[in-house]
Amino acid sequence: EKGGYKHFMLKEIYEQPQVLRDTLREFKTIQKVVDEIGEIKRICFVACGTSYHAALVGKYLFESILHIPTDAIIASEFQYTANTLDEETLAIFITQSGETADTLNALKAANKNSKTLAIVNVIGSTATREADHVIYTRAGPEIAVAATKTYICQLACIYMLAAAIGKKPEIMEDLKKVPEEIEKILREDNFIKEIAKTYKDKPDFLFIGRGFSYPTALEGALKLKEITYIHAEGYASGELKHGPIALIEDGVPVVAIAPPPFPLETTKIEEDEFHDSHSLTLGNIEEVKSRGAKVIGLGAEDDEEFKKNTSAYISFNPSIREEISPLLYIIPLQLLAYHISVMKKEDPDHPRNLAKCVTVD
Ligand code: F6R
Image (cartoon, rainbow, N blue to C red; front, side, top):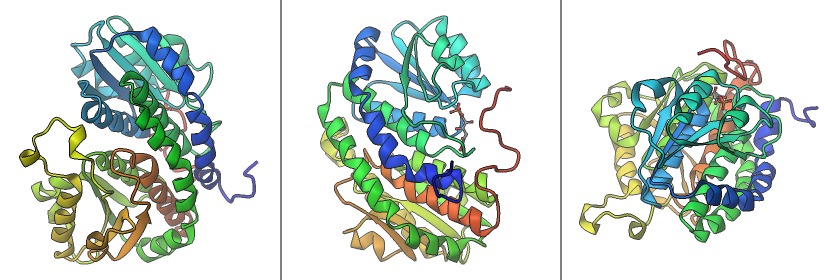
């Protein structure tokens, strides 16, 4: 049943190129859903955990590329903040299981005053019956408690929604390049295992990224803490100097995510006011390095300036820029967490205190 893999989690990580291709075939269906929904003035993503990190990527995508006002709300916080939804708002609920109590409660509340759409993996689950519209991720069953392949498929659905709503075929073109790039990264698994071996006994990790890489930093940190029990925090790189830099001392691993930057022409920001995420993150990396941090870098293979400030560097195809990078840059962080978990003799498929589906609020 594990198809020759030692754990379901590893099998599911390796399935990602295929399930992403399967999910990309849903584009026509998504276009139909978008036509049915009609005009959208505002979007509100709602989810928990890893699905919330997909929601956060959605906020960056819809606001920076489509210029549609978009929120990403943690489902358990929904009732305290989402008091201004209306019929011109599309509330999008992202849930692998379709049974998460916090997400379902928020969905029921949103149904009263806005249009609702659910992005779900489990066919026929409660969320699919409650929402006005449904899009399925084609990840297949996910057995390991930690979400991996369903996250990639959720992201793919969000990007396809953006392509359909914004009538931007170039987003689809970018998406189609990703499965092959995931395959290339999976071939670097032994190198990632080496990194895992070097850092597995460290008690704390920081993950940093700006813009589209901020959700990746949060998700990388979540994967690590869930299955290795190492303390890990994900931060927006710019926030380091506002507190967490106090934690940096000799030898602390900092995972820095800095893909080639988002192009200025797609933003509404004036040139002299635009500070690209990449050069600023590089500055933040120098700050932590000079205080003794061991930087594990994730960036383009030709980015010599970044590489020289790192202790380990995971390289990606430079044509995958920031705006599509969340689908690719998370893969080595899933592997890193997996390998550390196995090296620490933990069970990555069944982390303590966690259940696959959280039906209490
Ligand atoms: C993390 C993880 C959880 C879920 C969260 C939401 O690896 O699996 O954080 O993402 O419990 O679950 P769903 O997507 O089923 O609503």
